[in-house]
Image 1 (cartoon, rainbow, N blue to C red):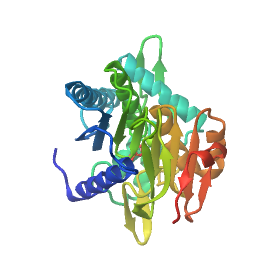
Image 2: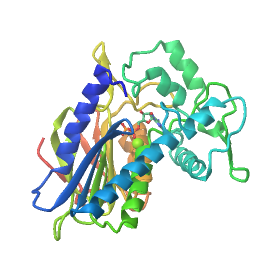
Image 3: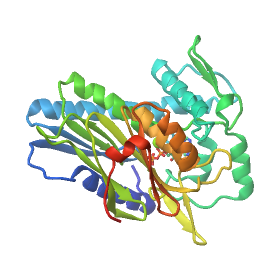
Length: 338
Ligand code: ADP
Ligand code: MG
């Protein structure tokens, strides 16, 4: 893989996140750790214990994440890419797994009034945040790309098992849910291998399984969006997933204005009003999809959705740096002085 400077710098930032987020607290347990560059980020796998079985389980997780990447990648050739290639031409049979994931994405779009929209592909391509060298596009190009976005137009036929994007230039981008899905798959793999204690950090999307050691939970830090080396809150992560969507992960500034990778599908521009939102949920898909969606919606509507979703809590830092926490979140998010 060719890494340009912007992507390299970004990945280095993420690697710091990994160190911070997985190393809060002491570290006396026997832990096996391995890190891979995949899914556009560093993935750090920590399994409690040692010996061949533990290594085997970690290798199986890596293989599973690679398989999910091959299914969902927006930039590399993938099953998802095959659907996009046939936009405006013909329906595609992507297989049961991808069909289900797209269906879940469309459900999330429905529940969030389109704030989460898996058809943001034309905008993702235009802004090019995940490609490496993003620049401010022309307003007309933004309008043109926005006109190609619209989850309601996706024709998913569950009976024939096909997906059709009816207009040329439409494209699906599952970047806002794929890492969460990968974490859910990884959990299944670990369970199959008899692992009950592990932490997987996929670029800040973190799965915590079991306890780090008897009586000691895995502890994960939430970064300060304006000083990402500082932690604003800490969470005990036992059998849950934590995901943060932030405006500091992939961004550039132009004329004093910050442009980042979470786009408002209604305007075609980066969503405003929030610096970061962290979601804790029982599973990765829910956490990842909701983090992106409520980032776009902001704390007002965002908190309403969080409150009405069972088992989910949220932690917002709004554009002025104020913290807003869902009602059950005060017990989960241990805030630190800022
Ligand atoms: P990250 O992947 O950096 O953890 P997110 O989960 O919030 O962050 O996903 C952001 C990615 O999702 C973007 O890079 C883009 O590919 C895609 N995306 C951006 N805006 C939206 C949106 N409103 N709805 C769905 N996907 C989006
Ligand atoms: Mg997301």
